[in-house]
Length: 208
Image (tube, rainbow, N blue to C red; front, side, top):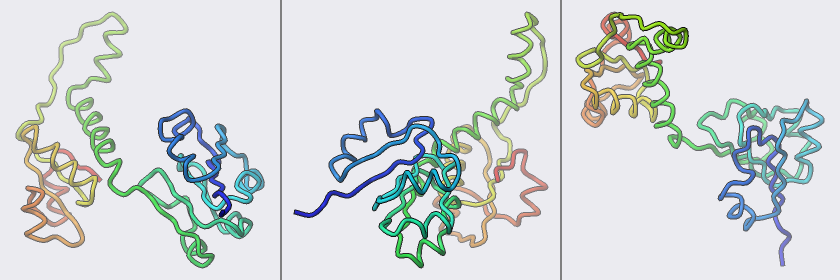
């Protein structure tokens, strides 16, 4: 019978895996060790991850640079609960045979919703109105209607595509710029590709 895999979550702060329904499923794959505070410094990270075949980065704040990776000879996989992998030295990981996985596209709707929340807050001056109401004042003021306005999206990956969908759903005209525009992609997203300069000059709202 083969030995169970050691899986370490070195900095689950705030908790994302600890106490979640996914923990039981994770435990079926190996012995799971979760630290619910963030490791302070290189030594703490290496100490926590020592002997692990798998590291789960539930938070991007925990970085894995060359010094740490070379100190973990048994490590075979780092998986991060994020789109980005910039917290991991990918070149060294590849050299050492450590597989790095992420979650491309999984958080795109959340990021796009966050951006639209900020956009609505600015257009409707919600932040200012909230402060006024807390102070006991009811101030009348003009706000901006977004229907019919132009949304400019820089980059049409997972997040950009979700931004386009939401923009069209509220009646905005959507234009976009990308390194590799194509008519097929434009039809798929329902956007018009333009040059970056034109986008910046004509869009009422720009998403980077």
